[in-house]
Length: 311
Image 1 (cartoon, rainbow, N blue to C red):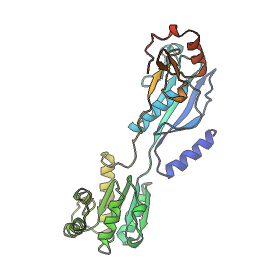
Image 2 (image 1 turned 60 degrees about the horizontal axis):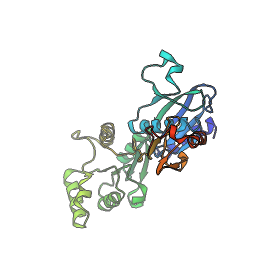
Image 3 (image 1 turned 45 degrees about the horizontal axis):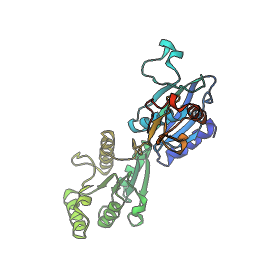
Image 4 (image 1 turned 180 degrees about the horizontal axis):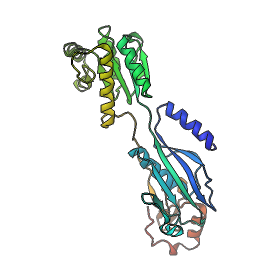
């Protein structure tokens, strides 16, 4: 994919609720396989779509991208030798030395793209419609589903579910929502009604832990309010919980990092796997950023085996 294709793909992933990092080459010094305005999408698991550089640059960008996804903070990465730039390296820029034969350098901006919250409102009342409209205004992915039509397949572990059926099948809707294990599950009801619904579910064998995660009543306690204000109170609670990091909506989640090793020839950090061109020497497995480094090692292993490069 070229740069524009990457942006179209990134837009599609964002609409699907996927978290990833977008890396863009903002400066280059030749020779370098990375091109100005080259772009790539890096997933939380380290998969790359697009192109930002060759075997030396890509592992460093992937590592930084995974950190950016976890922290939610963008980063500016300089790939090259600090000696090339002297004191011209701006403060706060992360410099990753590249020791391969190429004397090129890249400056890559990596920004996190976090999914918009997925809100499922179950019900058909004016309050439910208002809540859905307000969430949509915030840019959230909001869906309004009638009580009889709602199933556990309509939500997932990163969804926010608000049951607003108002006495029309509350128990059944909450039970189906519990089966989806959402990040948030709230019931629009009075304290008394909420206790009755949760008591019914416990009598049906719903585990105490699962029933205890249901917020009843949903929303911040604003006292006696109108239906419209109830919608505001619920959305305010969701915004508050999300801002505090108490909602596992998918942002910041990163899969376990693959094992890494240091290329004994050039000193680059590489993936300790098939992509790292593994070579066993004297019972020890070494990994390399490219075939050229592996060939250099094979010519004279004794020149490199004492380096801290074993996996």
